[in-house]
Length: 165
Image (cartoon, rainbow, N blue to C red; front, side, top):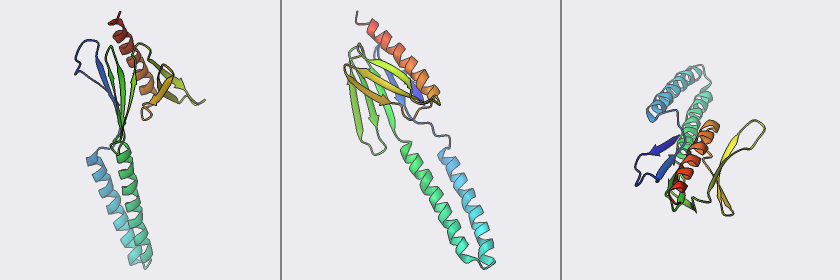
């Protein structure tokens, strides 16, 4: 998902925030886990009453594993990337779920955005390159979002360059 923040210092400054899309809200997660737990408990009790008591424990294990998998997925969804563009600097900041920050700085005059097709099935990747260094970003975006963002960032770079000369 892409946010283009309107908090611009001048008409040539731009800030973009990229973050992964999560279709299941926290409330939806609670409802889903409640339903899975209820169904597992009821079916597990049926097996328990039939004398197959170990099956009840496996249903509980299934619920715990599903919960753990979703929590891991939500943690991975906390990654985000910001791009701040001024006529003097293009700064890409990647913030990992652990809080670790990676920052990459480019001269906007030399910076180039490319959306490359990586595989025969049409999967793409976004690259930012300038002066011998290249950084892949937006890995969590969909292919369409990558193409759209490449166009938007290229337009912002062109507009930013126009203010220098």
